[in-house]
Image 1 (cartoon, rainbow, N blue to C red):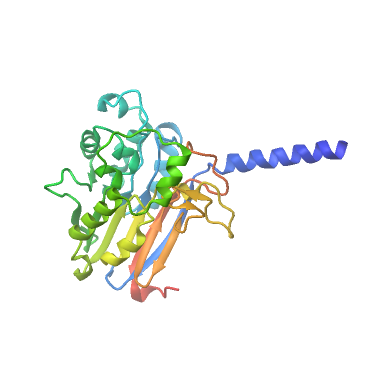
Image 2 (image 1 turned 135 degrees about the vertical axis):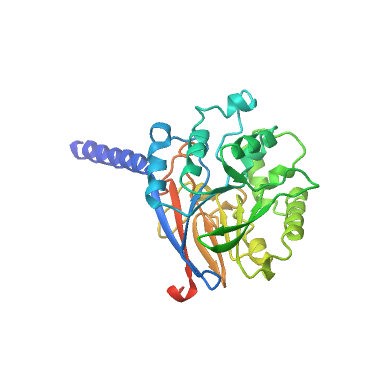
Length: 316
């Protein structure tokens, strides 16, 4: 009996330690080599905060980004939560909102570019939210309306030209009001990869970015959704940055890189990491949220991406 009690205590202690360390912030490094790059550029990816907190006024998170000293910051959505008592911008996006604390401070570190995730797109007055974010000094690459697309920027970073494009979440195209989906509804969504909304979204991206493959500068896409990587590759992008998966919730390295991700289902293919396909590189963040589900072997992370000249590294 004594051995059983001691064993039980050890198991519970191990579980508690696992849960506590699973929420510690992690920096994850990737390197992308391209013949279109002639000077090294460092980018940081911020995704899926879901209003989580990292220290007083996001101090721990901001300090980590400051130490990295990025040349540019990419933000791929779901910074806020969509289930609220009020959607008045002054209330939902107040100075005490953890997302606003972070978004206000990031432009002081480096130029910031953002696309909307499904949680932003679910907010009825998402346009007002996007305007409020832009007032903080963050360029939001999204579609203001169906007539005048506002989806890309030609930027220069350390004398390096980049075509930076955005793809707002497909939920942005939805006409019906959002509601909290049941587990059965989510499973149906995972299986339905060719519904009317997602098909129209793919067609719109194909029209808007039909000439990307012809550009001689580095072409980068920010898109919350990672499961559409085949489309991003087909359009001719050199690199794409995404989030949405929360790292597949639970991981078992090196065997399982994620148990479940929205819109991918069980054992998602692109749950988090760096995926390379003959010149196309897809970086998927495991996100920052500590709210949605207990993270197991899946710490909240800040991906750091070094873009380097092709001659400087031999890609495997």
